[in-house]
Length: 392
Image (tube, rainbow, N blue to C red; front, side, top):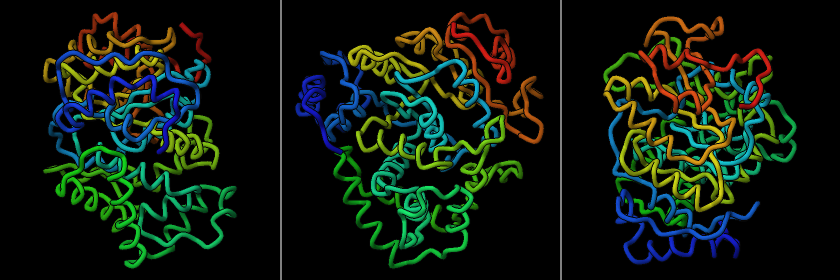
């Protein structure tokens, strides 16, 4: 939450824009973008004012999607981690949609900056809740205790080396405490307001509602949709944070103090920036690409979940590809996506016992186009997760 002098020089014009029109008014602007001279310095924190201004500069007006999306419904989301390592997908800029499954990819890729983009403004609000809780919690047990409204154990330092199973067991066997929750919510509200992203009373009520769901359901929370019955194959939050990679190693961002520390460090430096935007919109991704060029950074990974299914159905898929093509990208940049069998049949890369199939596809393949169907898109030239791959 603090800023360095090098970064302040790099974003001077962004801050000038925010001062003129206000962060809320700039959100979704489609006019010219202020230049941002200089490259981001390695390890430099981003100030709160720059964090808010960048989010506002990139964001579009929010849209609707019929899920709460508080947690992922992708049980196989970690199966790509080994291939990411073999491809040496590291550093640069990470972009992803949705809630905290992004953090597990971020912990592995260790980007210089990350943007969490979603068509729902609600996702930005949840990201602010998660950001505040993570910044306040030096350890995983403190974070999960705060997220679920449980009092943290007295000896938190002793929990650094404990397994994620131990941390989850603590949360599962500790009751939520109303006094703890009340005090925490007051502190969270104060901290969230300090970032400079305008939050209305309705926004704060939405954040309290989201937090309330984590408190009420704890580690048994599941993904839910409006007007659709819960699916039995949706994982619990417990299952997501204890999930394994293809080699059977627990690998979520909460699986170790080291992985959690990567995410916490980026959050504390304001390098995980939530924005509101449509992947096939006319502003957010183009502006994000411009910001990356001004920062001197390249895209290394873009996590799309299964958003492309809906873009294909809405006939806006080609616009998404055009938007992606605007990004400066490394030669081995990848798209991380999730595929569900109810959207086209079984995937050739499906892992037995998992409903969702996670895949990697080189960005260059997606940009080349020529796909005959959504199923063709998600199966064409995908990277074999079991075989060491050569960087493109």
